Image (cartoon, rainbow, N blue to C red; front, side, top):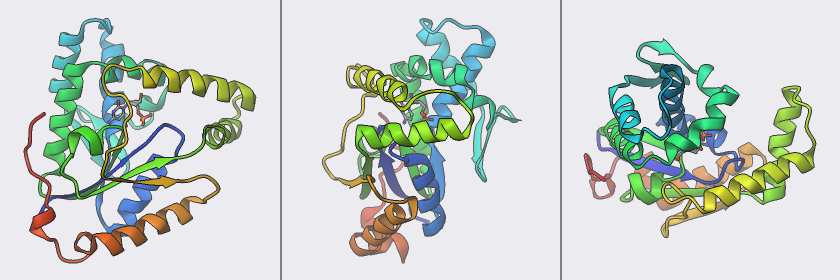
Length: 237
Ligand code: DC
């Protein structure tokens, strides 16, 4: 089967992961959660007590990990780490790993290898701009800062975390500012990406919009594969 990749990039809080997972299901594609890969490396680094400054050693750790993603579960060296990689400690440190150029290179190669011969929806922040630049179908999901903060605040409330909307908004602004000034892995919109503003839309409405556009503009993605649009396999960074 020809390789076909749909990329979804965007800021935290735009609803990327739920939407990407669901879009993959609707299209019958595999789903690749690239944030989970950065989280796995971070978990391994924390467990091994390696300093985040030791970029070379961390890149070697990234290379040595056996990562598998199937049926919504993430395994690292055979261990199910789906929960462990969502711990606050991992979330707190993951940008240290995501800023490591050598790690990005290792994980980008793994992502391309994963995509080979598959039809996938991949979600991250560099998928359309760096990893799968030849993808014929790119989305950039976005939402206003207020909407993103509101979603995050509701999610925290549901989990019983005591915080205010203003606090969440303040933290998000700080994160966005850090993000915008990142030397590597910073968020950009690919020139050929379709920007989807999710403000005021339900998850289903966003997915409907995306499926409609895929069907309309890329009928080959949902019917017979068209080799002209296949992603260049095995392309290195
Ligand atoms: O989407 P997430 O929260 O699971 O992502 C975890 C971290 O990894 C977050 O800081 C963004 C970063 N990331 C990245 O730099 N490049 C990607 N392709 C995916 C995630």
